[in-house]
Length: 221
Image (cartoon, rainbow, N blue to C red; front, top):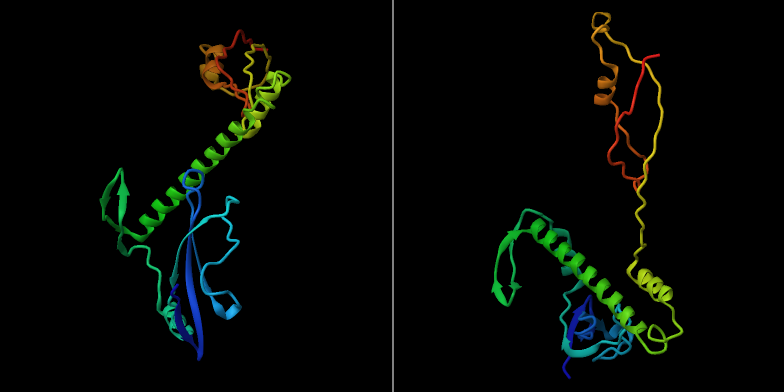
């Protein structure tokens, strides 16, 4: 097993890069760990590595790692600037087709963020499916002593869903108010038609939707 060595500020260190992969059917996470023997880590694979999903990933490879001197790294950090409008070319694989598009950095960041959100959503869905499958056993959901309400309640909890029932309603309300009109228009003024044009009925509760409404009658006091 080969390892890489470098000198950092007069001190010789041995670095190794360990690459792990989690279950491709359940998680498919790739993990890379680079370690130095400076802190007592042995050269070679690192044990007890855990995936964020909780599984123990499989070790794919152990390779020598080259770490630049501290002074060089600091100089690189000081001279590196971020420009969101810089054009970058990257490798893209879609439906088995390989392409090399060139886009701006901020556009690539947006695509990566969208991919991360989509991946997170798919992982959440897969986790929900796994929980449902785990409950479909002879001892639980298929147990004749487990009633339908328990199964439905479990499904709603797993999916984060709250069932709703729609209630249709009708009613009548009275109102009163006042308005000013030109005295010259008073003789031909139609109060009911005017109010029908300007009055609306709404709700401050997002779960309540007001459909049709009309003015049954209105009179001038």
